[in-house]
Image (cartoon, rainbow, N blue to C red; front, top):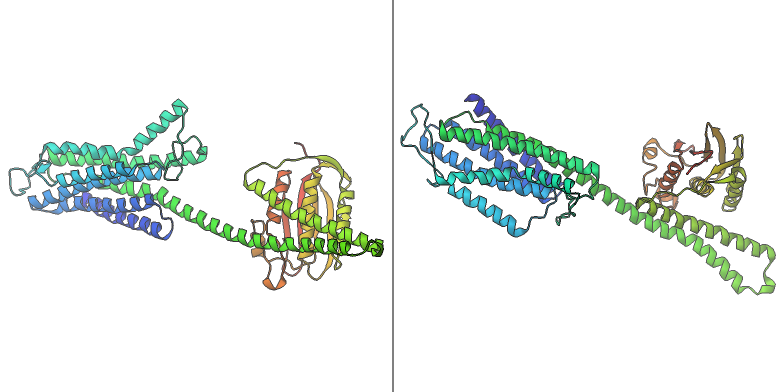
Length: 491
């Protein structure tokens, strides 16, 4: 009996603590109805285990009967709460009328446990240490209703098995959560859900089996049998808390990440709008100047300078728009299309450096060619886009000017292209977060604009081509961005 009492006390304390923890998660982290129901379920399960303990230590027969009846009443309530929780956890749509009916039936049966028609005293009035059984009333058969609700996970597993056999799936539930019976659910996510469902089923089976054993022994054998069903309660509370708590924490992390991403998007949108004003202002300024000047007064040199500036700013504007379109395609899960062509990379980079040089007077752009060959079968457009973005960043983040070197060298079957600047550099903390979306590390006083999506997108493009991208940098001593690309890209 000491072992049974110890099990009951441990189950009571642990179940209530688990319930309090889940409720704290519900109110502080992820406000989901399933978490609220499971937290309350664990607390009521703890109360059920406490009733089991009290029925074991009481000496007066009537007091024992009261605790046993209360234990049976809580059994019906917990069975209804467990069935409701399983449905919510799996995203199944229970109509409000059905939910109210289920709880109403459970409450009615709970009230009926306190009537002689459910359980009554034996003929003897006091416990004398001999085995004495309670008298079962006709309503005791309603316990089957509670056991049926406890085995709700079996019903869902059977439905899933029938869905697999028939090859037909169901849609996402009306609760807005992923439906475990849906064929559209990813295989790994569905396997995870089914594993969690099996864990809860193990706890539910333990509760049902041990309740049958204990209640049957109490009814047919002795008032004070070895109480084992609190062990099932403890098992269910712990096994259920693992996936519920994990999902709540993961949901909160996702929400915080989404909120951070949305704030970063808003900031990036402001930066994009601000940065687009510069090329548009330059284009508009030169165009209006040319329109207002009499054709006889337009100098050829000024005309060439104006058209070159308009072309450069239009190229800059096109680059920003293409970056936004590319990031949208990647976020939509669309694959990157590779278009390899035979290209003289040295000539292409030389032309790029010449074009970028026209955008700055403070920097000196140089090409350092160390590769053995000049022509390669690569996606020239994407390599051009990556190098151009890295050069643009090198110019932006080198406010004091200096050399910006593009170095090309062999790396076995790959080319390694590096962009080396003498700019502001980065700390180790900044390097660890550099390639995240919308991540920028600029002091406000520097007034350097940008979208924060360039490096994230460039890395995605490089990896799509079969290469990798990295950086070496030291705060105040400049940065070296490098990436590799196969010398021959095959689609």
